Amino acid sequence: MPQLEFLIKCGVYGLMGLGIIAAVGAVLLPNLFHAGLALAFVLVTIAGIFMSVGAEFLGMVQILLYVGGVMTLIIYTIMLTGRLGAKDVRAQNRQGIFAAIAAGFFVCWIGPLILKTGAWPQRESDSAPPLLSVEDLGMSLMTEYVFPFEVLGVLLFAVLIGAIVIARQDRPS
Amino acid sequence: MIIPLEHVLLFSLILFAIGMVGVLTRRNAIGILISIELLLNAVNVNLVCFSRVSEDPMAGQMFAFFVIALAAAAAAVGLAIVVAIYRTRNTVQTDEIQLLKW
Image 1 (cartoon, each protein chain N blue to C red):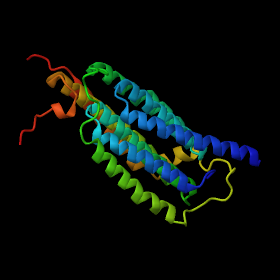
Image 2: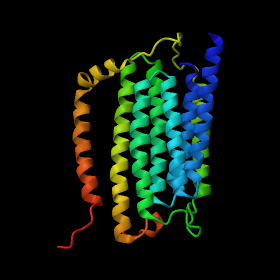
Image 3: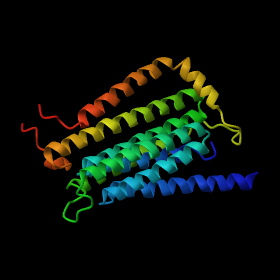
Image 4: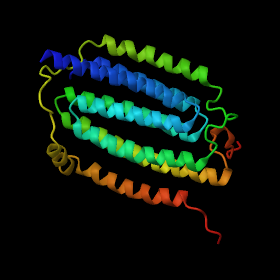
């Protein structure tokens, strides 16, 4: 169905545009709380892109873990550390022009490289069903990738303890 | 892929550049962390889209999983450090934290 495919294309490009606009907001907005909300929007658009390229489970993980977990953490920390959007506090340091030049140079360097490489792999049949089911992912996680998975478990445990120890109030001894 | 791979790569390149500007210019430590999340997400978009067109689609998605988990870990520890610094120094502006003298 060409019409449906066209609509999906429009949707994906729209998501990309919205994501870039929201990313600019997340970087430049002076009020950090608004920047956090813009970041949440970027994360949702990226989850949409994941789903459109056939990684549905990863898109759901993105929404649950990022928009649900990390964003809650960021917003709590913004509220805990105060000085929210005070008028006299500059949001940016004085290196803005240099950072913009560096980023522009980066884009102008890599972008033409991406466009000039003509031989990106393409998959022909696109309305094909998703390549990977959740079952495949789980099986792979428990067989081929079991070592990094276990290491990640140990790391998350260390992070759990470390974050509590670092953020804990020092008891007067 | 429903759209050409180049366009997705350009999208993630622009996202990465925006995040880079944020890391370099934000004064607030939480703002820097937000920008780092943008960088990691740009990389994830690349991984997932390459997994869609590659011969072994599992590898890219697995890497994206691990990147997401590590980003969550980095955010947890980073924000804990921000809270601890706010307790001791009463500021989170990175240019007001001058503990290292030389």
